[in-house]
Amino acid sequence: MTLRLDRRRFLTGLGLASALPLSGCFDPLVASDSTARNVLEKANDLTYRAQRLLLRSDQLAPEFAASEIRQPMRPNGTVSPQDADYMVLVRENFASWRFTIDGMVERPMRVSLDELRAMPSRTQITRHDCVEGWSCVAKWTGTPLAGLLDQAGVKAQARYVVFNCLDTMENGFLGPVRYYESIDLVDARHPQTILAYGLNDAALPVANGAPLRVRVERQLGYKMAKFLSGITLTDSLQAFGDGSGGYWEDRGYEWFAGI
Image 1: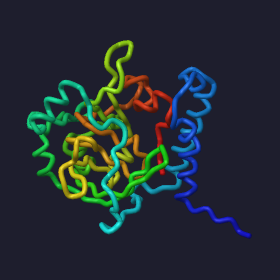
Image 2 (image 1 turned 45 degrees about the vertical axis):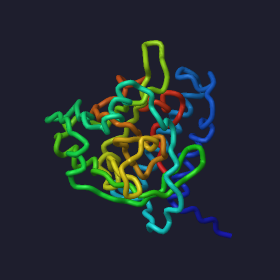
Image 3 (image 1 turned 180 degrees about the vertical axis):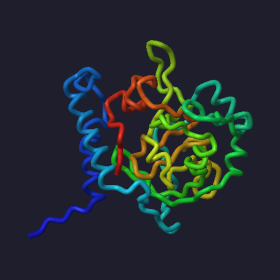
Image 4 (image 1 turned 60 degrees about the vertical axis):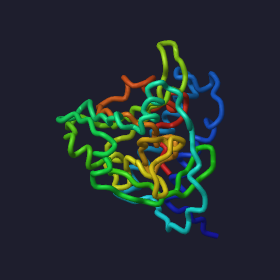
């Protein structure tokens, strides 16, 4: 008997093998200075290099027909931030909200939600895959991130896009800890990577990340940061959070969550 393993299943297995043991609570076993954490980081690096070797930079995630949207998009993570500044934005329907692009760019930017909506857009029906094991098909509309990067003029030394968010996850030793995430410029410029302001032909609801969330369709759900306030272009992730590239990555999840 010949065993067949298609590329997508192979890559999904690589990603989930390191993610699944981390989907519940964490303990000292995966502390940042532990041997176990070092092993996981090496596995994550292998996953990343395998994906980059086997996948073209422009290869698309599967897209679906509207008939395959069978339920509302299930919210993931935080569904109602209680941060005072965010609650003000909700009450005013995000009129004063501005999306900032800074860091290693030639032309830092601040744009309103209306300005984003006026830019070239993309609509895609894709499947959201959560590290907890569930999935959901939904229609997303937003601005391709690549176009904004071109407008800002990314400097040659930049390697990553860091997503800055408005939702506080916990109160840390140095104060409130807000969600953040990051991807490399390969995924940032992927044609399906969009800054989504629409969900299923309506404005993006608060529970799903209003006013703006990123969709990175070839990665797991926790990479798709919600409640965005802006992005920072950088050549290193060390200065953000605990240096692992994302809120959950700082707590043991893998940075490259490709599927």
